[in-house]
Length: 87
Image (cartoon, rainbow, N blue to C red; front, side, top):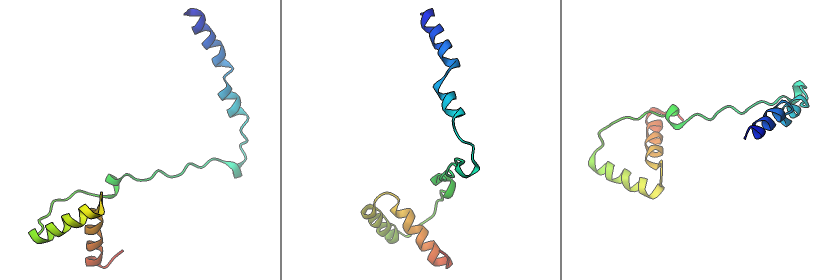
């Protein structure tokens, strides 16, 4: 076991990774620019509790079931945009 540990220690100093890093050109035109992280759903939305008329709730539930996941949220957000006159 000690032999294995020593072998790992001795190869760590001449790591392939450090050779790869040293060989990278630092030309400003080829700098790696990471993509900005996509915001999480929870960062863009807030949960709220509201009262909806029974008939409207039934219609919303049917439309949500037909449209799949997130359809109710999409419908409500679209309705609020129309109400407030914004996109």
